[in-house]
Image (cartoon, rainbow, N blue to C red; front, side, top):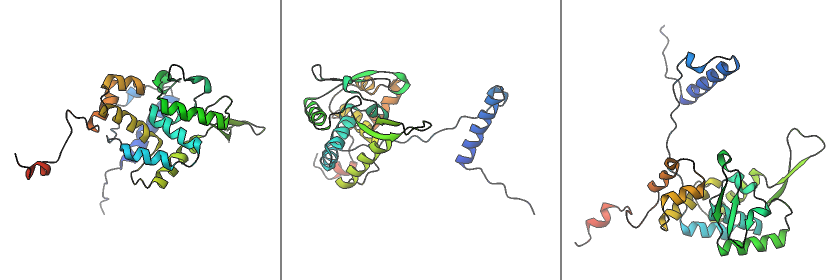
Length: 235
């Protein structure tokens, strides 16, 4: 009986290629010995919240710590690890700036702080009295004996704060911490900021990464509409 040949799944193909690359590397062989095809990733547009949904999200955060954390993620376009790595001395209330140190690719940048966010940060610092890290927690450090702890807020803690606020706010969109960064970039474009300034604020190395937000943003110059809207509208 002739065996039926099935096309391997995408995940099977991916792990086969990765496995071969790893085998070549540990064997000291060049990957060029066998031409391995590139794995094409599906290009998805980011999920973006509306201004109303952001307000509901901030209002739904029960703890002041979580409310300020979510406000920073959205108001400064921070990645999860960037928010966790913030120190008190990264805040400059006089110049209204936040120093994001060693972001993706080790690249640092400055982003503006608005008066509303500064007011919230001051209230949070006065209430919580953080000493070094802006957002603190207590998680065990892997591989260290003696019960050593990392005093930064954990990644899971940041994710939980955003998920719980979204659930309480009744937002049905699939929301992650990075959704707030996507929303930050999209809202800046919709509010009139140019694409190059958005690129710098996000800390992108390449403009192509930032251009995806042009496909999501609804700007006044090219706001999309349905033809049905015009169908019965008098000329």
